[in-house]
Length: 224
Picture 1 (tube, one colour):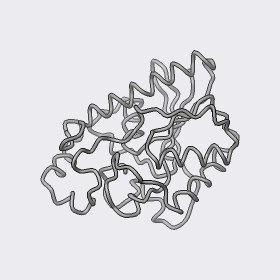
Picture 2: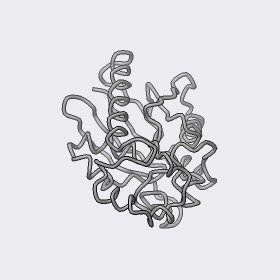
Picture 3: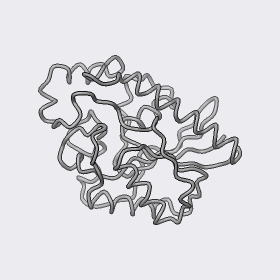
Picture 4: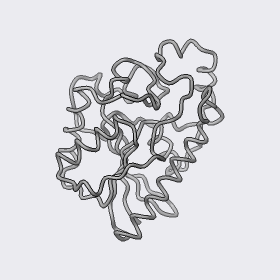
């Protein structure tokens, strides 16, 4: 079966500001995020993906273009994949993480993520189902067009990647936040009837210890 490399976008302006970006428009990479992405490109140099599927949100599009430009990946292999976009956080989108941690609903989210519905947005279960469906559909397309040994890349967000990895590992969805996926990191899954996870949250050493924060910010909920 094809091999999927899941790439989380580099540090975003929302990560740096400590806000929950969600699908808020205009959230791009910081200069550090660009440097992280270039470092990741060198880390994976030699990778020749048949497809680079990308969340439609700006920070992922910028990450994908930086990777493709640095590694000379053909533009026609990049494809926007709506199913890979960030969680719909509803009314929480754009709010500061500090203010959200004071809300009772935040504690509900921490206690039982799988059953949580973001106010005015989607549920965690809906997000996970959407992400899994997108990955399975894209993987099937890659397999049919490029063969069983093809490699492809998905550039997405923290929560999406964590949910896909939790499914591949056979973990209960309620524990998906226990998987650390830092900004500008790569995780690898061999998909098939029994998925095999061979790499989680790997990235080259970069910058200060703060750059290794697995959430890209001070809180453990919200992939930004």
